[in-house]
Image (cartoon, rainbow, N blue to C red):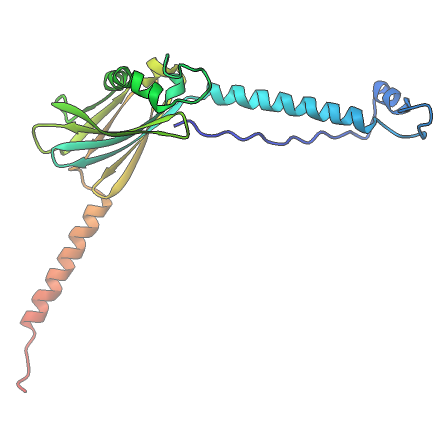
Length: 236
């Protein structure tokens, strides 16, 4: 999902050595009664500050639009893989019909089948065989332009590993990045998918530190239980 970009205030200072042009500006009086030694007047300063703010806002806006990003959270649940996908609807053609920078539910309803088709074509989950069915359990608009979809990828067997592929860069631009987070055996695994790295493998059957900890804890508990049972007891 695209991040919000805030404008930073930039300080503009005057160095110790002034140029002849700066000295000339300083020597110009604001009026016929201006006191000597007074620099640029407050009206001129306000105009310069206003121009600087406009430049900064335009630059920040351009940078925000040039940066493209989407997100997904993935969880394996038996034969299902549940995915919450978030992407910017403003980056998809002909969704924001009114061109006001916001997407209404009426506009989304008009385009939802096409958007869902694009998602299925450019965001795929295999386990390792192709999915049997993809369902949309829920969808919503967040922050007036971000589509949040709860997808369920259904397979005909228990899922132990998945391959996730994102070609959203072909749809949203070559610089697009997709941030995928998978919850595997209680641990979060994160990967960034883009034009140079379009797929990732997540294995729920692999040995993890969490699994090692569970096995060690169970072993210690069983050993203590066995020792307690073999401990000689004194008659009361």
